[in-house]
Amino acid sequence: MQIIFLHMKTNTELIMPVTPPEFYVERGRRIEGIDMAETGQVHLPGLRQLFSQRMEFLLPSSARNYASGGWAGEPYAVAERLAEWSDNGDVLRFIVTGTPVNYPVLLGPVRHGQRDGTGDVYVTLELRRYRELAEESTEINQDTGNLGRAAPQEKKGEGAYTVAKGDTLWGICRRYYGDGQLAWKLAEANGIKNANLIYPGQTVRLPDKSAL
Image (cartoon, rainbow, N blue to C red):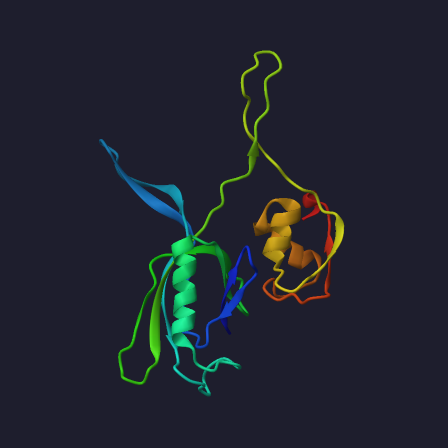
């Protein structure tokens, strides 16, 4: 299992060198309690709770046998890149390989430092799930000249797509269907067992959105 941050605009991929021993994801709705006269307290479904998580990562100062392959030890370069993404408000994909976790997130302030004199850096990230506002267009009411209700724009499937380096099923679904959350249904339609794993050169069938 690896934790990957994928920059949505540049397709820059950052694989964290050491996976934390545990992680948790919460999703669903809040429960709202209401006190009603003579009836007592009742519980009702509230607003959806967006994914929010604080995680600490170890960035070794040199190559270690427990770090990801290819890690040579540049902890401050990684910390600086994460801080830059936070400063810019860049949207990233938070991906945990081997699991369904693949969420768009924003980074809060990046905290990093040393604690044991080895030169290893510990970085703490605040991850907040990003929810994109739907792209909208406005229509003019021909009778009154007033602006009508905004309507989301969608793209229908276009037959097939050849995966390029840096592509994700979420990005492909966002591009062609207007909804990245269809990634898991598209994976199922193509017999892909893990929606997080696609490869350059792979052909992905793009059925009509209504068929997903």
